[in-house]
Length: 214
Image (cartoon, rainbow, N blue to C red; front, side, top):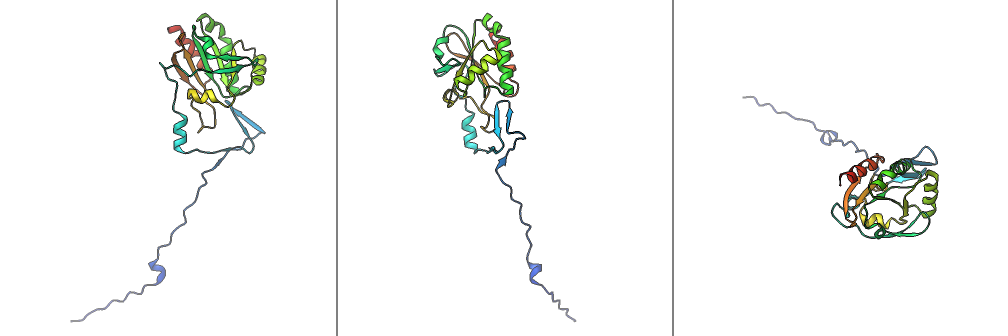
């Protein structure tokens, strides 16, 4: 009986599996504005601005609301557009609309401020006061109020202490201060929380609708 012997010649390259290098991606996002300063609904960026993505833990902590419907917001005393101290307790006895906005003179914030101005008589008819709060200084608020003839109070929350205490959530991974409106009743209890960053004029519609329903 004949036997057949097979000999296979193996070379080193045939035993090795070549690996294609995996591409690497940078986790740093760089956002470059076309002009020296870009303004987008309250976000101000310079040419060298970098938008960094925080960890999931920091994002989670930034969106936990501290003031919710049925709760009593933390009290505060801030300077108005004339540099005079104003306390939240001043408004007890009547409903008050407190709206936090990103910054003076930005497109979205200007629309919102003017919409509150145009409907101010309706708020007064409902017995409510309107108060706007941002991190701008009193001088900035004064110029903003005079330029657009705003008839209500603007308060300066420099350092964003009150914004943090109230738990106003940020947008764009914390890069953009939140736009949130609260309606407090005559006892100072929060009855409505409304958040809408990119439709600033909706804040006026929703708060007026709520005030008319109570």
